[in-house]
Image (cartoon, rainbow, N blue to C red):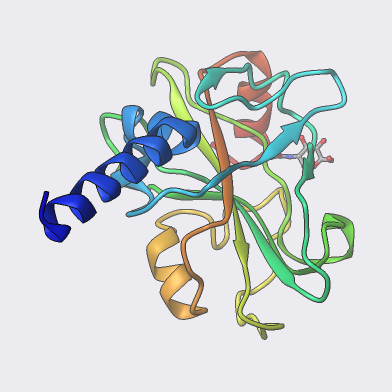
Length: 205
Ligand SMILES: *[C@@H]1O[C@H](CO)[C@@H](O)[C@H](O)[C@H]1NC(C)=O
C-alpha cells in the first residue's frame, strides 16, 4: 500500500469513528438544524434540564408547559474561560414558513465558568410559544466558548418583549463576536398547547 493510500484509510477510519461518536451532529443533520442554524455542529451534548424533570434530548418533543420556566444548563468549563449561551428557534412562525426566524429566546454572555446566573443577561428566557396550527418548531441550545471577555452591544431584552427577538441570525451573531463553532448544543421540538397561548398573549400576539 502506498503511503497516500494508507493515510486515506486512516483518515476514513478516523472519520467513521468521529461520525459514530458524535450523536448530536447526527441529530442536528437529521433534523436540519444544520444547515438551518449552523454550518457545523458541536462536539458535545449540552445538558439542559427543567425543575419538573423534563430534559432536552436531541430533538425530542417537549410541551410548552414543560419548558415554561428557565432550565438548568450544565457543562464542563475551563478555568478562566468565558462562555455565551444561546437558545434560538429557526421555525418562526413555522417550520414551513421561517419568515421571522430565527426567533431568539435566551442569550447570556460572558459566563465565567458555568454559572449562567453570573453571566451578562442580554435576553431574558422566553419559553416556547408556537402558534396554534403551526406544527412542531425546533428550539436549539448552543454554547460558545468566547475568545475572551466580550463587550456586547445588544440592548437588553426582557422576556416579556419581542424586541431584538425576530430575524435573529446565529451565523451573523457568531461572525460579529468572532465565535467559533459552538462547543456544545442540544435541541427539542414543541407544538402549541395552552401555555403557549398564555406566552403569546404576554407578547401581544
Ligand atoms: C417570563 O418570565 C417569567 C418568570 O420566569 C415567566 O413566568 C413568564 O412565562 C416568561 N414569559 C415568557 C413570554 O416566556
